[in-house]
Image (tube, rainbow, N blue to C red; front, side):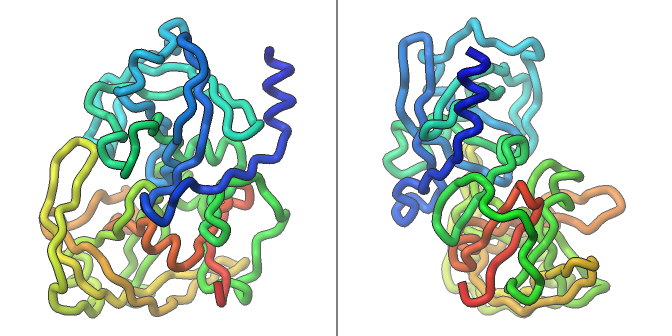
Length: 303
């Protein structure tokens, strides 16, 4: 069995996102192997989550014999899920076979939040992407194996930022934004979020220019809590880094859902605060590539 899985893992993965234009989320088709037989459905590939999670609606299909030795953990950032059970689950994406650990909690069921999502199995986090050196590619709307061995040059890119910066600190992908080099913030590159968000405090303290309110939205989390947010045009600066770690700031204007309930999402010790999320609207519009093999997040010029 192990040799069969190792051979399958050597195959090149290339899976298109399913119905991205309608769902707004990067869904990949998968086959979950369960005690009741195979179950075909979708995983959301979530770069804003460190861990893999399986939806509560899948409970009847779980193989309880696959309960992991370390059975409990707390998932931060997704409603602060406490005492999750962990399961080792076997599944295929295309012809590639995987055995991964998934957290399971009664308060997490992603099927409620994805359009036509009755077949959504759960989410694959950045730990999975890093472990298998995969590429989240919004230029081709696909999840695939590495295709190049070198980081694209700064001249080729609209912006680029090291993935290790976020992976080493929080286990997720981060991007830097700034008004100037003395006033920097961090944003989560979050494929599990369809609308980009930023805090009002960040806009005010950074000096970013923003428009008047254009609309109101309810920002909904998987814990079923909601915060009213204002839609605004905000002019931010994307931090880009070259091979020598020299930085520059690229002007970028986009729509954000602006929340005022908290100053920051969180603050990394002795580092810049996390002021918001760059969701699928930003990632798709800029044809962003998150390359976990090269440990780089970038967008090509003219993409």
